[in-house]
Length: 349
Image (cartoon, rainbow, N blue to C red; front, top):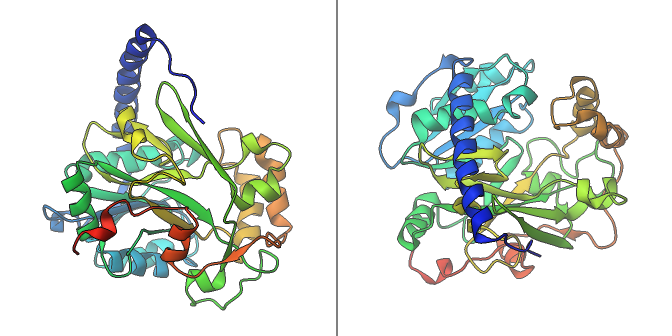
């Protein structure tokens, strides 16, 4: 579904306003960059052509070892990470990783646009001209053939096609039983610990003037937002972009400016090459994290409105139902229409 396009005069007016919005957000990112304290700055080792990975983290020791291994396997050369006052040893662990540059941000996550101002500063400083993956610590990017064709091959294909970005759907994974009990022990792969997902339904629409897409559906909407599906999580993201200093993320990595970046992904059913972000939110610590969020109120623009959602997660409900599907591999997700390979798999790797 696509909203009707506005008349030409309004499009011109909107374009002018969006240019101003983009400049305002860039200035905001640069100011936020002054809040970052370097703990381990290894950015001098970044070379032309390196693929970078950026994230804001807080208390992610349950996820970070697999997350780092996954993106290293994909071909990431350097990680640029902001730690927002972790208390579980996340910062000490990351300082010991030779390919990680780490900064501390003591400010409020929500006031930094949910960490995007901090990451925007790092993208401006270090990302220009590089293909950059921007992903949360509970998101593992996969794409058709990811296990045999790494990111350097993928971005070369995107460059040849003249594409500045690749979109992906965030796919919520969950266990068979209550959310505080994974299906495999700690240390097992994410897709063994949380092997289930909703194959459908999903729906995507475009919104003017930013041409941002809004993709809804999936397990969280089904269980937590059934009566108000329009308030469910937005599942489309642009996690992989050849960065330019003129670019800026707007709402997490769901959308960006300039608006043409948002045209790179139309959600499930888009015939172009796209990916999946395997979402490991619902590991056994999810109930405790939701309880903490009830106090912190840092993860939504209107945290009070989402208190019932966090309160429901605290109860560790069962997300599994009779239509749940067990994860197998990327081919399964492509066959289900959740991502596509375009002409990527027909070219030589």
